[in-house]
Length: 263
Image (cartoon, rainbow, N blue to C red; front, top):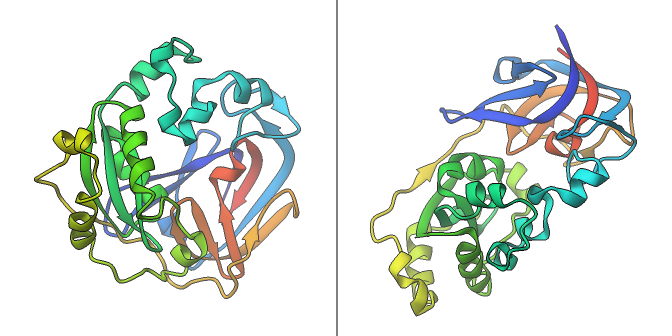
């Protein structure tokens, strides 16, 4: 079987294990069904912006043309550094985007992927965020009214706990033996007084398992800019990665690439 179209990031449904879908053009290919099978991804030497659709030679920020990267609110610096949100200064690139994505309740959370990390996510986007990071467990610790406030608390807590994931360890399932409940109690002492009203006294632990038969022999990153065709046995799926027997392929990084996916 094969499908042809422009790649989009992996989509998923929360299940045991996570159910993954590859977006190839208008098709949603259920990947769990192909575990253990040989897959082939062939680059057709064409790229298109994931927002405006125009043909481009180079993508920016995982799938955008340069004008969309430069102008769209979702590509502003404050997306990766939310404490720098400038919505209230009247300089947001798109007020409607800010209203929908930034001026809404956000969780500050602890997640366990390679080790414990602190992060933020829109309350309505939490499961997607945790799965995209390859978390095996996550617990919200605070619910704040805006993205900027969440980013400020995250920035403060990142002095005491990491805010990054080691993707190689995450994919190898080399997960630190840490008790998120215990870390939560320890980190509470570090929360500034102004954020204490947002602390979640009652919260819940969420756990995730991923479809995985094995792990790659080598944790080598595979990319279509270096080779036009990637073939391998699909041994697992985690975060935004396809785990092949000889390396890993990051789907989000190839957003906008026109490919044929064959099984």
